[in-house]
Amino acid sequence: MKTAAIILGIVGGIAGLVGTALSFLAGGLGEAFPFLATSSGMELRWAALAFSVMGILGGALASSKASTAGLVMVAAGLGGLMSVAMAYAVAAPLLIAAGVLASLCGESSGESTKTVERPP
Image (cartoon, rainbow, N blue to C red; front, side):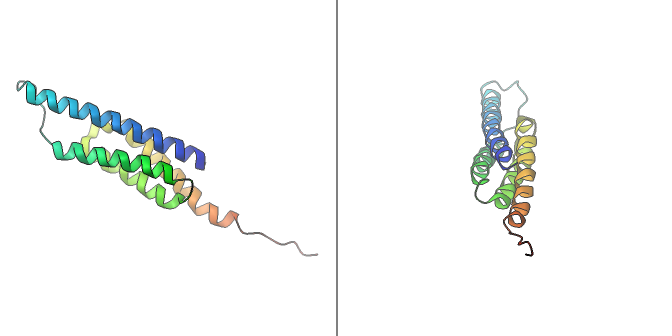
């Protein structure tokens, strides 16, 4: 499950980068052609870019600190979804699923390292 969290986190972060780039493109077209109805929320697009990078870093961190990486990826998925909404529609479910998987791996990994001794 940890490998799936890593892959989903990195793919979700890359999908977020693509969605954010498309969002920047749409905003630029809205500035160039005023008859297109686009909002100018550039701050939200920059925030979505930061959330995408945060998702990639969370995916990379999932192998060593799974529960922390899980929180980072869930926060990145929800934050990006709130920032640019439909441009993050592919990335958000991937990052949230990766975060949940990483969190589940983080909780169970501490228990699986305990050794149980059998009585003689």
